[in-house]
Length: 168
Image (cartoon, rainbow, N blue to C red):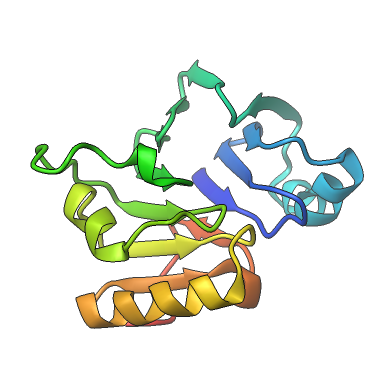
């Protein structure tokens, strides 16, 4: 079973790339107790036996089931573009790169329309590192663009492939 799970972790981003019983965990510097609180029950339920951590700030991973190099994460089935600031967006006029999901983090100072132009997709996730005000703004923009939106702060972890999106 292949999944990408974006958790609501206090203090930073936490993403698991799961393949059967193995996990590559992409994270910021989050204290271990907060990681356990956010992800442990789900990892136990999945029967995960191996957890390899990679730090989002400058790290990369090239395992057989999880490829990560900012701003992209792919498990071979799904590709995410992670936008945590405007520098992650390609130059205006660059060829769009289609992805399955756009993940917005750290109160990125971006317009959702610009992100969707650079990374066309049908699903947007706003993780728990964003303010409620910023999330509401992006949610309204997503509704206007006809794109599904998942707010991790209010809806909990986002799990691919099970993600359907609450807002349209």
